[in-house]
Image (cartoon, rainbow, N blue to C red; front, side):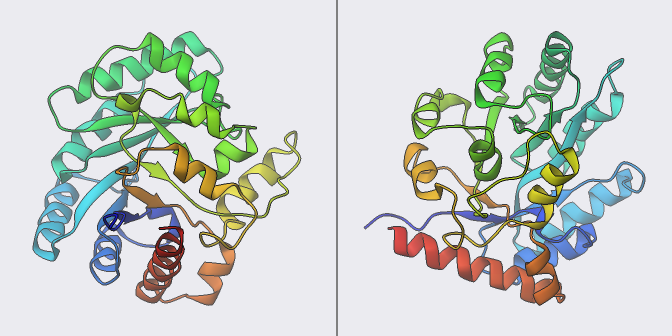
Length: 266
């Protein structure tokens, strides 16, 4: 029998949660891992120590931290600090996106993060999507092909892959060594106007759906990626937040619907 798929509580499911609440919710629900959102305005070295201890005591391993956001202009030291925070928390991955339209600059800044992650146990995952300047899987591949280091990785989010016109063949062609985890979700089949940035963001943070309850080619994505990849369930949804204002119940509901679809798919 196929082993049960490992899933993680993506931090975006509960944007109002504190770091401590993210650990509590992962521990109280049927997830194998937790995810952590790190805010530069409020995070301190003491936060790292406190959250690492809480996660250890609760038996919660962190699949990822987010988000290292590459911006135009000179390199931002905060991004390398995020690598240290992820390592300090024992997280396996750091999620990275780029809003720098200069692909040479994006590549150089991503290389800096990969270099910073060497020997830490953290992999820096470049996520593509039409809300960023690395809009497609092809563009993300170009960046990774130019970057050296075993800490580099490529992150596939079902919504961003589908909205950017990706195919299952594209996913199957990704070098397997580039893959550390993935972010599945479902959503309405019809996406926003790709020229309307506000609609694109609304689609990403409010309109996602439980696995199997929307119109995305979710099964095709899962089938095209390695079966052992952990999944950070990225169900960022206004409906989920409104229906389950209690954070623990929200986490439990997301785990329930995700497990149900994964079991059915098996």
